[in-house]
Image 1: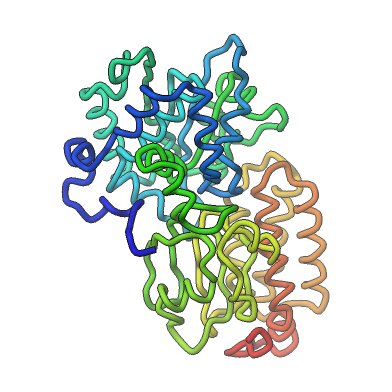
Image 2: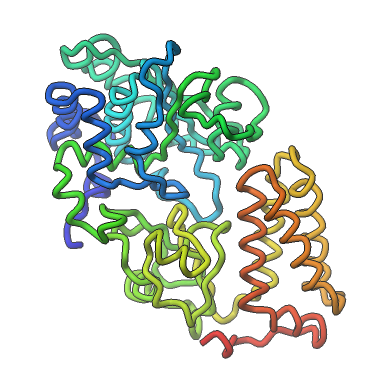
Length: 425
């Protein structure tokens, strides 16, 4: 993919200002949607594009919007999930800090499609610059008539508010996010009912990711044919990959999905800092790591799922041969243990126990049965936790045990880890 699309405006000094955005086609997609499409036609258009969510599970966006009941008799709401709390994930902040109108335009189109008169832009509290730029952009959109009453001369009216999170990773889970907006403690709710039926204030609600909304505005400006011409048929469109970890060229890269993991970390990431790669986490720390022998996997939803991992937020974390996998597992597990909301016992009790065992192994005090005990904990948390936080934590830890069990055994029996993992080459 030679042309940057999602990142096109990022480097311009006036990229956050509405004058620059309009000069480069901004809000033309919204005007087109309001003039030429009914709400149902907007949903069908997004379905045709096969846009899949850019925040985690990759659920088809148009299908998600279609779940909102037509005649519920209740207000409809729209939420943008800009919490971005997954370690290794930092691509959404670029939209908010450098091209916020792109996201706002996509949100207004989505709100029109589902009949929402109010939307909330939920931003993690640590993102001070993002909050500033988004609030500035929303004010500009009001001044220009893209928000408020009778947008662009149409019958559609919409108001948008920024809601600032308080640093809780769990609020990236959509029902916990809604609880937070309502002023309650951020904890996940039982599903079903799903938010599309009973979400914010028990009313029909759609929640999408920052990058997803950015794609929506491009789809209406450039067309479905353009969008579907990029990447694989089952996962089209450009995608931002955030590369970090032990590689030479970390950063955010815009590429079509379907590129191989090996090509991504070598050709774009510049290769390992030292020696060779040992493993890569392909989609944020809840995504199971993939060892070197699996680097031919394609970076899309289906192929990564077949490899027992996931694309998630496309936060790619590379580990070179100097990395201790048990140490990486311990840090990941401690993060999830700390961020658990405590609602369910498997997550509340299981993750701290996992951290205790991992710390014991890493300190050279590991016991022969510790890896098996970790497997038991993973099974209990994976099968019985209330939400995806526990599932992701257990899934990630299981992958380290599956691919790098010999490192655990070496730490327990020899108190050392081989510098280079030759068995995964």
